Image 1 (cartoon, rainbow, N blue to C red):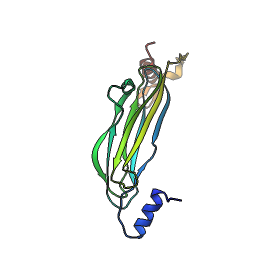
Image 2: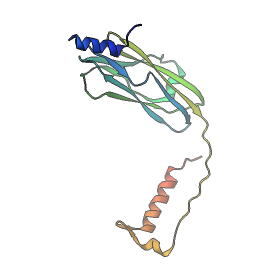
Image 3: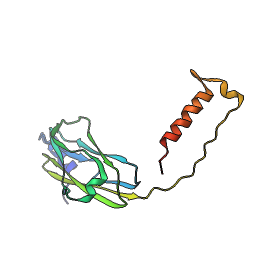
Image 4: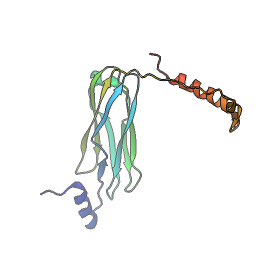
Length: 173
């Protein structure tokens, strides 16, 4: 049976052969169900587990005409960069913000100088769903203790600020 890329890299390291070894935390990034009007960020994370500098780039391979591209608010691609052995990983946020209901999918390609993985396809998938209405109740306390201090302001002032934030965060619909 063929050895994994990590086993081969360890053998090369023991033999004194320096080589890069790309590790991609996930080749499929699934956003699950995301309500229209909301967004969800996940990351494409790239590591160099090898003993030589890893040259890596990320490009979008989904055609520009594909309507699913409009469902991603942010697609982070990179030109060729170098990741040193043992360096922190490169983290590229990919933001899914569906504009339509249904399943959406796009693809990116990670290109590297890792001889075992020169090109890896990354699939981003998510499902836009209709927002679910939520009933909420805001209960306010106006008892005498609300005039007591909570830090540098009264409890009633803190409650007012919290109520304003609550109403600011509500969706218009």
